[in-house]
Length: 236
Image (cartoon, rainbow, N blue to C red):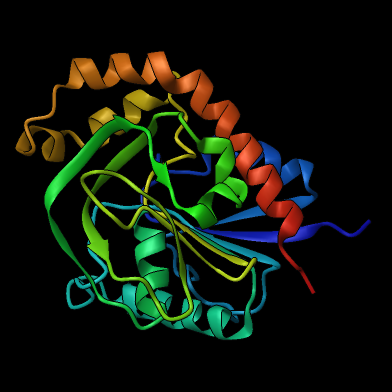
């Protein structure tokens, strides 16, 4: 069987696929990271990959004046949305998908950082996100978005309504970090985002302890969610 290709856009090195890498490989995908700062970071045709995954990062979609590559990401994602090509966005990635679909992305007015369960909509309960029900997810964002055209809301929290959406069976946006590896690698998140955590007055010891408490269940739930979602996507 010919391997399928998964191109992964990575904005911050430690915010990688985490626990989602294993189900991708089991499903027969070869994983290729494209990292910000490399010359050919976005130098490819939008439809080149069977699956595109856009990961998180501590910048805003609307900051394209400071980070011009964001406009190219939106263009690539818009082309994939128009073609219905399998695409997953996480945090910033979900916001970029929303923007590519014509929606606005903007500051929410709060920093939602920490572990909390999501509330699934009726559509979410019938989707692969059902595997996440009742499991505290890692939230780490200050922006939110309007739903893009044709999207279905899948999940919310009490603080931020837009937590996940789908467009058909091939497009999925997750505002939260289901992929986070909360083992030893989680320390990279705490150090890498130290300034943001300090500014938001987040209790780092509690965040670390919560990662240890909830991490195993999160990893199992995320694996099951990703496995089920990959089974339903249509790769031409």
